[in-house]
Image (cartoon, rainbow, N blue to C red):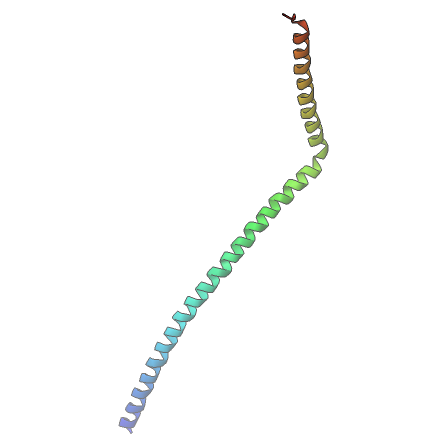
Length: 105
């Protein structure tokens, strides 16, 4: 009985060797494909986070503009008035200078 028991243990150990070898190969291949999958999923999550951040910034800018529309309107009106009055001042100065010159024939 000892010989049959030894042979059956030897065959069982060879089976366990191949089973663990195949299990190890499967684990390596499976983890490789899982890593590739997680890489792509992480990349798309990264892109989604970037777009979400951009939308948050644009939304914040929009809230700022809406919240301060009166102040921005006063600043814009002041800038327009400044440009308009400085242009008119230059035109009037040219007209006064041209009217003060004598015609030479």
